[in-house]
Image (cartoon, rainbow, N blue to C red):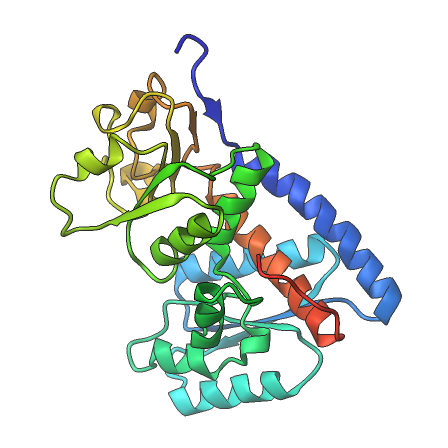
Length: 292
C-alpha cells in the first residue's frame, strides 16, 4: 500500500459530533427552558480519575450542558454513596448520573451501578440497559463501543457482511461492541486470553477490534491486508507515552484503515457520554428513542 491506510481520526470525529450535539442542546434548551444535565460523583483523590472528571465537566460546558461534580472523601461509606445516588435518581435537575470508576475497595461497583436509575445510566452499565442492548431495544450503550460505531459510520465503513474479530470480552468494550457489530450484520468472533491460535482468527478478519490492554498484542503478520483495525488499548509507558494494543507503525503497511493511540477511540468516549446525556434529557421530556 503506497499511500498508507486511512487514519481514523477520533479527534476529528469528536469535534464534528460535538458540534452537532451543541446545536441539539441549544434547541433542547430553547424548547424546554432548561439545559441537559449530568451529575458526576467521584470518591477519593485518584489523580487519573480527577483528570477524567474535569474533562467530562469541561465537555459538558463546551456543548451547552450543565453539570455538577460531587467529590466525596475516600472513606465515604457505601450506604452514603447509595443515598446520594438515590437523591439524584429522584430529582429532575440532572438527566444523567455517572459515578467515576474505580471505586475504593470497600464499595461494591456492582451495587453502585445497579443503584443508578436505568433512565439516568448514561454509562450504559446497568443490567437493564445491558439487556436492552442484547434485545435490540432502545437504551443506553456503553460509551466506548458506541464511539467505535460512530467513528466507523463517519468514515463510511459498513460492517455488513464483514468478518469481524473482537479481542477482549469485557462488559465495557468487548461484549457490547460485538453486539453492535452483529446489529450491523457483521459475522463476529470474540477472542480472549484463552483463545488458541489468535492469529488464525485475526488473519481472516476484515475488521479487528483490539480491546485487551496489552501492548504489542496485534502485529502486522496477524492482519489481513486491507483490514480495518480499531485499537482500544491504552498502555502507559515510561515517560508518560501512551500506546495501544496494536503495533501501529508495523500495521501502516498492511491495514486499510486504522485508529491511532492516542487520538483514535479515546476522544470518542466522552463525546458519546454527552450523546447519552442528551438522549436521557430527551427521554425525560417524553420524546421517543430508537435502538442505536
